Structure formats: C-alpha cells, structure tokens
Length: 68
Image (tube, rainbow, N blue to C red):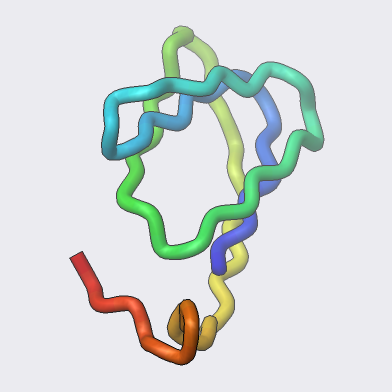
C-alpha cells in the first residue's frame, strides 16, 4: 500500500490513461499495487511525501490473485 500526501499541483496518471489532478495542499492518495505515473503540469515545484507499506496479497474466495 502506498500513501502520498501532495503539496502543490500534480497529476496522477493511471494505467488505463485516466488522470486525476491534485491541487489542494494536504490531499492524500491511497493506492494498492497499481501501475501509475506522476506529472507536474505547472512551472513551479511540487512536493509529495511517499510512505510505502508491505501489503498481504489480495485473496478472493480463498484464491490469491495473480500478478499482472
């Protein structure tokens, strides 16, 4: 699990191409093993704080989900 606290303006780009813009200082994003990218759309600095925690594999109906 990853938690990102955003200060400034930054865009989160997900694997499917969807984008979410974060502009309010202190906004928090929680992700769980997703492919993603970050883009700073402006000409000023953006700061993010990242905390990465180990997570157990996802289990659905007693079966562990496979990667990919």
